[in-house]
Figure 1 (cartoon, rainbow, N blue to C red):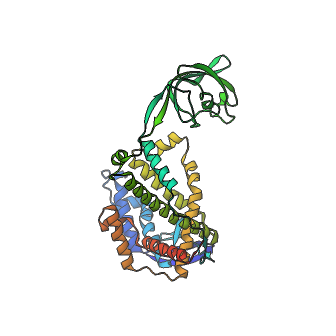
Figure 2 (tube, helix red, strand yellow):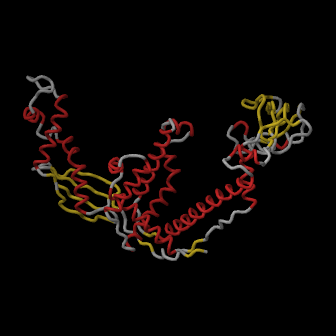
Figure 3 (cartoon, rainbow, N blue to C red):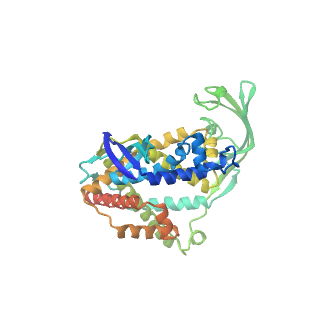
Length: 424
């Protein structure tokens, strides 16, 4: 197998002429014969037992060529791409040229573009503050108290925002009840905005045991066609008013929710937790600002195939996550009322950002003469194996060496850009 020629046809597109020698093609034809002979019924022979020469005499010498070509061309094309030293992102077409004295074909491939990135040094970045205030500490503790709260019945006042009202309700258009507008003993969090505008507000101020009617107007974009923009009345019976009772912030509470003994110790721990989170958010924000700027700076004719590949990769990752949770993609799409094309549309913008950022950083790696050694790759394989708790050989089967080198180079390029950034 050999590369006969490599010709640039247009931007990011090459035509490769590839030859497969006669001996290799003959082995592929023999493999095709063994695969297909079981389906051949030739007079004078038991089904699947006819010699290859007899089948070729009856049906033509090229009868086994289609599968033989399929066996040959992937490996031959891969070898030709490597020989041409191209970074192929997609194969646009494959065309058979000849099957005389071997096999010859043409392939049109789309390659990774050569982009430019100017002005990547000295990118201006606004750095977030990481000072932890007393208010932050109290708010964080209040969240913990809220998660450990209990609901108590209110009997000495009307319903207020923040309460949970236990209600029966039934909706009417004029004097006619409409479908889906009725429920009993429904727990409605007042002020949550979970019901149509005006509904929750008209519960506020009423006492447990009251029966009353409220009037609301359905939004113009409401999902039920027959209710869009309609004035409706709801008959309400307010059974009970409940509110959250938060635990006291004392040493006993601290012992219940942590391994600390006192409020002061707990506040110190919460402060450290918040500080760590703020620092992580700061680092992520800096990286996002730099990424946004690099995406603006990268210039080049980027093939659509690269965006399509990234979208498909993201969908495969999402599908894997769904399966790990016991759900398949078709079931998910059915629940969401969407198809695969709509899902691709959701991922498209993020895919474009990822592709542009990676191209920018790969170019910077070249400009900065970043070199990744085999030892660097081996060290990263070892790290990945330890992280995921698998054997290094398993990682090597999954992760391509060239892709891993690119990943390391991209990471180092980002470190350079970040080091050179102008922090404000």
